[in-house]
Length: 67
Image 1 (cartoon, rainbow, N blue to C red):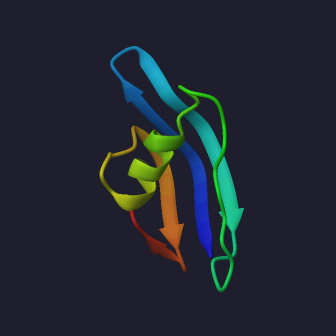
Image 2: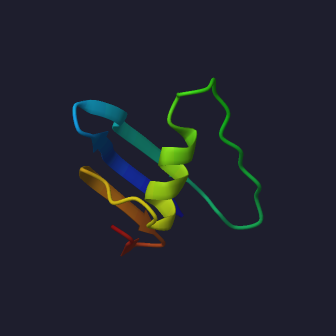
């Protein structure tokens, strides 16, 4: 299970992600994230994978804190 709670990522005064909450089962399923340019899709993926450090919030995979 992937759990994201109160995730925020800021670049200076710009908030790329603001209070994102998400919970999804990961076994045997394929999920996609869609949205317009500038919606924060890449920033969200970067925060989940550890490429970008969140300003606030947590990312957990099967109960293990990835942040």
